[in-house]
Image 1 (cartoon, rainbow, N blue to C red):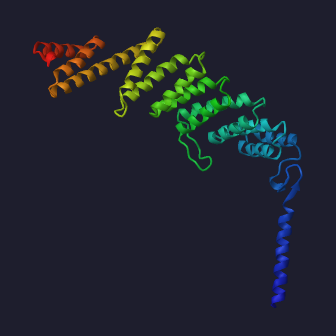
Image 2: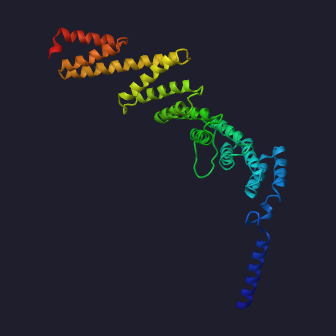
Length: 320
């Protein structure tokens, strides 16, 4: 075969492949791009919605999801686009793909905030957040893999950001704090509960938020890297809670926690006093023993403090 003949045959084959490929694609002025008819939406949003709904009603949710997606992609400005976006999320939920469902509702809320489905989208987001918080597994959506708790925080934050004063704003903010608390992120949890008080002062969740803030401060006080201010904060929060909500179901727990923290504070004062005794500084030791006795007289440690004060005063330690 001559070189000229080989070039001619190659050119014909290349042209044939190009022509075949070109025939599979059509330019659409509506979308401003080439599309493959095999994957194209119907000629109108209405026709595409009817087509998608035919699969949705037959509970063929994977196919329904594809068709709802095609409608939104082909006709993003159509009046039916928000409905298709919402039903895309519902289809994913029916398929037990909660991560994809959240992504669909997220787009609905962000792109179509004035649609009739906005409130329902927020509600479904919140319920998905609750499911994630309770341990529902997240399928891998995109390049980053989330744990259920991490996904719950993301969902609740999205609800708060886009519908802060809607029906689920205060609940999402509170639930965010609960998830952070359950993962030992005490400081972040405390800030989350504080936002419930700051942003939703009339919410029925404020009472619980106050107790949770005290709980977070209590947990922080147990960390050796924190100073006494965390303990003081926890004591003040528990004290305030008992005073403001004496009939609360959690009032007894708050009183018990306050009693425990007072014992800890008294015991720490005694330990400082003992340190100064070992340093042969009885006068300095007495300062701390007396403080424990005066500030925490109702604690078990007060008896130990009293014994130390009596012992040092009899031995003349207060003059040294």
